[in-house]
Each structure stands twice: as C-alpha cells, then as structure tokens.
Image (spheres, rainbow, N blue to C red):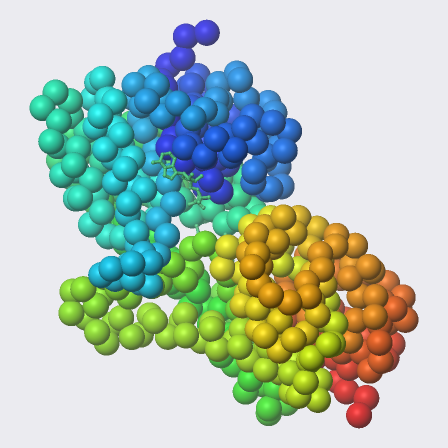
Length: 457
Ligand code: UDX
Ligand code: ADP
C-alpha cells in the first residue's frame, strides 16, 4: 500500500511509544516508524512483552504493528523516509556542570537534531514532543539551519498524557497544543501537524500558538498540577494535629467550581518522570533570567514533596517505638501511581531507602513494577524481598505501608492479612485507599494521611 505520509519518531519510551501507536491506529493512511538506540527496548516493542504497561496499549499495538506501525533501531533510514519527525527522547535533569540538579539535560535532544541534520535527504518538519525548556527550539533551529541543502521547520507539540491513562488521554485529549514560528513557513508546517490530529481530535480542541508559549505551557501545566498536590499534602500534617480530615477539606475546597475537585488527593508525595524534573527546569530558567523570587516560589512545590516523603518515614519510625531495626515492613506498591510499571521518581524509592537505613526488612509487592523496583534498589544494602503476592509480603510483617493506590490493595482479605502479621500490627496508608475504621476493628493500628490515627493503645 502506498502511504500518504511517513512519520518518524525518535525515542520509543513512555511517551513516544504510546503516542505513535495511537497515531498509527487512527491514521491508517500514514506509515509510522518509531526508532530508538536502545535495542532491547525495540525488541520488546516488537514482541508480546511491551516495555511499557498501559491499559489498552497491547491491543492497539497488536492491530497496527507491521501494518503501518514499525519499531526499529535504524535511525538513519527512518529520518530519510519521513517527512515529519517527532523527537521524543528523554530530557532528564542535568547531573553535571552548570545547572546540575536543576536544568534539563538536552544532550539526547541535540544528538537527535544532529542525526536529523546528518541523514536528511529532503526538507523536514521536526516536532518537539519531549518536554523541553522554553527556547529550546531556537537552539535546535540553529543546529538544523547549518544545512546548506535542506530546510527544517521546528514545531512544538508537547504531550499531556498521564501514565496509566495514556491511551485514553491520547484518544480523547482535553486539548492538543501545537506551537510554531509565526512565519508563513512556520504556520504551514504547523498546519501539517494539525492535519494529523484532525483525524480523530475535534478541531476546537487543537490549539495553535507561538512556539515559546507552547514550550512554556507544558512546563506551566505540570507546575500547576504538582502545585495542587503539594498544597493538599502541605495540609495533611496540620489535619493530623488538629483533628481536621483532609478528605473533608479536599471535598469542601474542590466543590468550589473555580477550584475543581481533581488532583486534590493527598499522597506520600508525587512521583513520575515529569513533575519534579519540569519544576526544577522551570526554576532554573527563572534563575537564569534573574527571577529569583519566581524561582523560589515554584521550587517550594518540590520541597514540600520531599518533606512529605520524609514525614511518612518519620511517622512510621516514631509510631513503631522509634526503632525499625529487624522489623519487617511490607511496601504495598512501588510504581509512582497505579496502572503503570513506571517507578521513576516514585516516592517508594526514597521511602524504601530510608527504611533500609533504619535497618528495617522490606518486602515489596506490586502487580507490575517489581522489575523496575529491583533496578531502582540495586546496590542498596539491606534485606529486601520482592513478591507479587501481597499475602506473601505480609507474612510476619510488623507493618504495611501503602505507597501506590492499586485497586488490588483495596480488595484484599485484611482479616487474613492481620492473622499473618506480627502484633501489634500497623498500617500506614500513604494513599488513603483503605477502609480505616474496618481495619481498626480487625485489630490494626491505622495511620491514614491527614486524619487522626486509630490506635489501640
Ligand atoms: C503528569 C501530568 O499529569 C501529564 O499531563 C504530563 O504529561 C506528565 O506528567 P504523570 O506523571 O504520568 O503525568 O501522572 P499524574 O497522574 O499526573 O501523577 C503524578 C504523580 O502525582 C503520581 O505520583 C500521582 O500518584 C500523584 N498524585 C496525583 C497525587 O499524589 N495526588 C493527586 O491528586 C494526583
Ligand atoms: P519519556 O518518558 O519522555 O518517553 P523515556 O526515557 O521513556 O522518556 O524514553 C526516551 C527514549 O529515547 C529512550 O528509550 C532512549 O533510549 C531514547 N533515546 C535517547 N536518545 C536517543 C537518540 N539519540 N536516538 C534514538 N533514541 C534515543
């Protein structure tokens, strides 16, 4: 079959993979090639054991793979064949030199731009899909404009999908944002990208803007979302002290239609590859432009998040008679949120490490994320066990700490769990997903977030 267009995507990660699968699924008239330098990842994309777990993803990939969706390590051929190249490589926090610990490391992005420059055999549209600092397009344009043969137009099209709901978010997005230079050629390229999304997204949900707004809007959206979580989390210790109930507060606050009720769930701290990285990046940009007060304002969101993780561990320590040495703690969940195998920046990592420092014995249970958990805790010295079976995890445990809000944990037989544990048995519910009153009646000492504890002594 002759394809109308060839779209390439450099980077087959949590964003690139699912996004391109949905484009291929919704646009059978396009050929979509996803490339990555990581051969193991590509092999998995070509197998039945995809490297990314997302509800609905397997079914979509199965339908379009080898029809109009292809995964490959051949970056050169993909660049040559495509008219439109999405770049979805990772932009982690820089770990060295100027801006270490704050700025985004654009080395993977720059390598991709240089690959495009090297292998291009015609004019191309290059689309920023990964979240990048505002003004990145300028640097990319500078590299690409050194070509004396071909013309490249850089477009910003940030991805707003959240993990665990990626397929639904891609199929029914709140909006699609496409930014470009406001020159005739910029606007023409932007329209090409609009055309792709028009295959399934209503036109009024496709927002076009100038390229800097588009780059910055993505950082701003993530900062706003994270800010809501830090705001609600910052109220949890006050609730625990005063007898107020954080769920009642979230409800009372969230019913104000100006505020809205989403993203007000208290937690052990937000994780994920985006929030912390993007806020640090935003902070760095502000500092770079001399906006110290603005930088401090955004940075507080991350500081409160760190505080919340530490506080969770301190509470476990204090309530369990100030020693965890030799005590077994079952961690319920390791993924940074439910319905994903992703553990990047998961609060579980910090919490597990701190508990091990206190010489606790850990048994970690998670339905999807154990493979990643093992990698995250590689080299950590201490007794750590992994099991997919929560009943196995709680055997002879002194405490359960709920880290991830998997539905599975809500529906367990807690009478049985209580009988398997050492007494006194503790539950620290870092997600407020369990029935606290019932657990207390069974015999547990229960510590919800942002509510007074239910203790038997
Ligand atoms: C986020 C943004 O939502 C998405 O738009 C962007 O493209 C990437 O970053 P993601 O990190 O996948 O997505 O997940 P999200 O659902 O936003 O959750 C992030 C973290 O916040 C998780 O650890 C989650 O458990 C936590 N969270 C979320 C809370 O603690 N409370 C809430 O009310 C909501
Ligand atoms: P995200 O969550 O933003 O998708 P990931 O880390 O999951 O981030 O994915 C980014 C992918 O980009 C990784 O699989 C990585 O191997 C790939 N990558 C990084 N640099 C290059 C490059 N120059 N060429 C091709 N792929 C790359």
